[in-house]
Length: 343
Image (cartoon, rainbow, N blue to C red; front, side, top):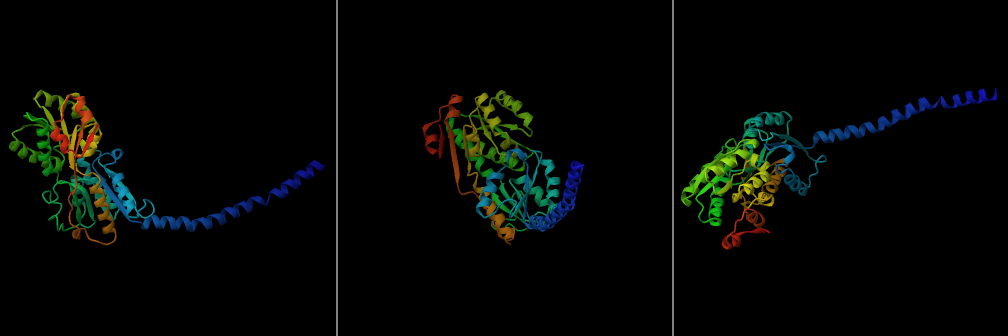
């Protein structure tokens, strides 16, 4: 009997805990609810930057460079700004639909790393500000009215890529004085690449060099394109930049080594990835300047009042390790011009 009384007593003692726990849970939810609502409101009120890129999401496409530059201006992702990323996976025809998605999200600024993305963004909106980081010819492509007075809702940083392709061909000719035929790797589906292909033909005539058009618009064409270039008698390779090329830079360098083709590339990261030589503007500068422009626009400046900027610093890099792999001796006068030599 004593055992039964003790059990009944224990039951009576535990009964009030249920309602007590419910009450505590209710009070906790009341206390936490305002915080969650405040956080949600804060998230909704922070500026959103729409990122429209042609390259796959996994390759970055300059995201880290831009984010780093933006942090130095006092921005922290998730705290006082947010990204909305859209990537076309090297399929340029997907860009218009992705641009429309970002417009429907009502982002505050659209950022594009290159020309085809910028053109798709401009067609999608005449009101949301657009900042580009790497357009070859902003005026010729119709993005802006002029470099000093862009007009409209678009501005950014030009790479002047068509101007530089002739310089790269000249450096290739100095490296291989008897050079007579050069394969040019370009993408006919990328606007800037097509512009550069036209320009390099003019430079080739002046230098007395014959060009072989090595058109590649999809990654599965690289191997076959190299084989065809060799069969055509190509003795060197000039690479024209495009999102597809940038995505496959290490593979391109490996194929150039395999076929013993001396090659020159448009950016320093190609040489760092095993390429023989590179000549072009500093890779970080466009993203640093673009971040400054996005900051100014978020603070009220109109894109039309921000002139399109051009690169101020150029680098010529020679990779002697790559030269050794293909049995090439780089002339002393060419090495003397290099800003950096990779041993």
